Image 1 (cartoon, rainbow, N blue to C red):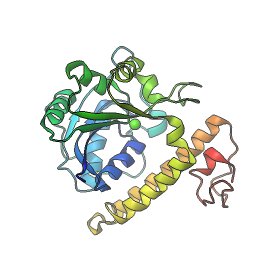
Image 2 (tube, rainbow, N blue to C red):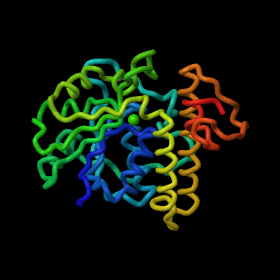
Image 3 (cartoon, rainbow, N blue to C red):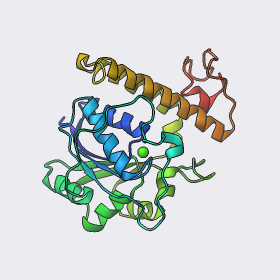
Image 4 (cartoon, protein in one colour):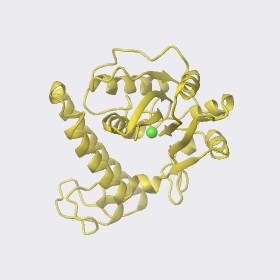
Length: 273
Ligand SMILES: [Ca+2]
């Protein structure tokens, strides 16, 4: 089976950086390119972060096109309270050496979809402004589907009901969800569940044995692994606080009664340790 052609539209951001690394490490995926949006930080920073991660793992052959710097209609707000001033606060990754394409993200998406022999899947893990703008100039021929990390069927993380990516640009989200195309929503619950946490741990394990264990990366790769693990743990604890669930302190060690894990990634959102 040929690899799935994918365009990743995102706003790195720690979790988006993990998504990128996983895509790079997945033989099932042919990554056609990256398009960036504001979200976890400003467009300038998320674009630089995308390039920094690519350069860290030696994949600066993957093209990056910068897209929306602000929502369609609303004021710009970024999630610096979660991802820090750089959008990737943690280990000091080297500054980006490369630059994004001169093409706008929308022109890039159109060109890549039209040029692909196989139907393209757009994976969007940030606010949906770029995807909405793309759909305003393209009818969606040549798309397999759009997979969105966003929304919630229960609790939000910006308001009691609203998840950040949808909250940041609801007009864009409305256009995407009403486009008539095949749209798959991976909501906040799925992203914070015990199952997804297990997937996250599996993904990190896979990364450790693929991209990040490349000997040429040396200690830098290990630092990124430590950073992603710490970030996932912090994220789980933060979500747990949001839900009012009890969690133990960082120094507590034990086995989760729910998932038999000794990490807190899933325990913090499912059952106390
Ligand atoms: Ca994101």
